[in-house]
Image 1 (cartoon, rainbow, N blue to C red):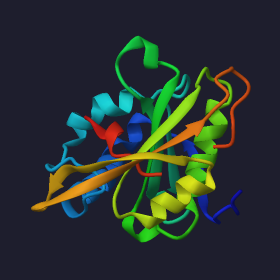
Image 2: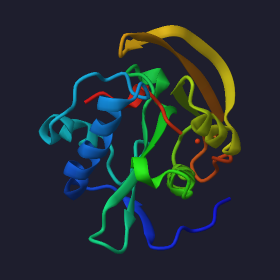
Image 3: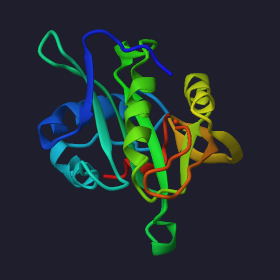
Length: 193
């Protein structure tokens, strides 16, 4: 689906990435309605979020890292628990965040390709993403990965003195380990600390 971006590797995230991932996310917290968090996090406050995304199982974290200039983190993608109740265990919520200066380079696409490839061997039946509106880039990315719109929560969040809608997207996955449908960006819901 994508061309490989030169000088970028996609790899599972690790504790060594915690500071960079926190800084990247906090840029969105401070300046955009893309996430409904309103206060920046410390790295330590984000540690439980990071630890909830091991390198195996249905809840994953992938990082895009430059291979030059000190290995800067350019973005990340996650699949997280959709809801805490046991019957939801075969559904995940997905998201992708790219550094503000990394947009338009295909990094979000590469991150989702890696994420959905990893989910092929997991018992995952559906993927969901909530996209704060407006966000045309995220809508295009989801559509390209086979997500379809399933509804909109109207004026569900207030940030910077304004109400925002969140459009919800669904992707059907096979749900059998070893078989996953075609694989999605920006999800408001999984960024709880």
